[in-house]
Image 1 (tube, rainbow, N blue to C red):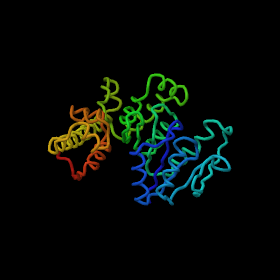
Image 2: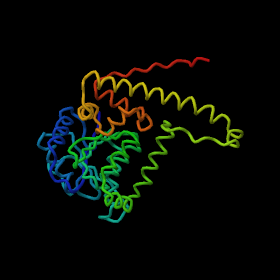
Image 3: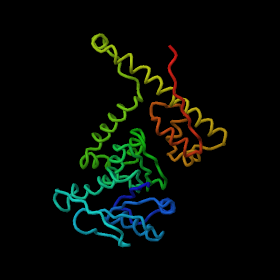
Image 4: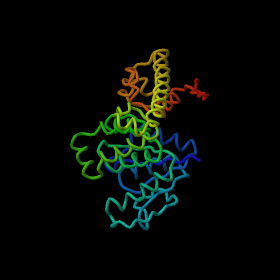
Length: 286
């Protein structure tokens, strides 16, 4: 059964109607939901779940009792060795919710490091998040490092500086980048010098075809998505809603910027548009 981790910034006490509608669909799909116990968005999410008579909800807390549990749902108590009331103390339950879920629905105020950390934690576990950016009143799907960087671009310079101070944001993004690159190279490899070619000849021979094939597949998917936009007469803003991404991502798509898209992101966009992606694997021609 699918489990959804729903969370948001403590500064958000009222959920936008788009978020309420998304939560309604989650409840209607009989998905399991895990939610925190904090004030702000957590409590508003709980109230929304109660309104839709959700019964497959688990409230996570750090310590003995949840601070908020509006419908007296089952409680999962997460133990933490950190000082009570500290950031690390409450982060323990967030990490556990990310571990226990299949994907996340986040409501973000463009500055909360807690919500941003949840997105990063899910991404590190190869799980995507749908983030409602409160400033733009729209959703952004985060399924790869490029999507995370785009999400961070909504932050002000001051908020970004605070995030660096609190959670070391750049290092976290760099960690995601390294992980993504190890799975699927999305940028040209650095040119090897003569010494490297002599000492590690197999690396260059093996990586180049893989990189070429990855680029070919991404280009084919991007072409199909662009043709769908033309065929259905969608504007960029309309296409963004259909594909579940932001308009700047559609702009990148139409300009053929394959290096900013991962295969999984393109497949997700195709699925959101109702397109079917098929894959054939066969021996390469010698």
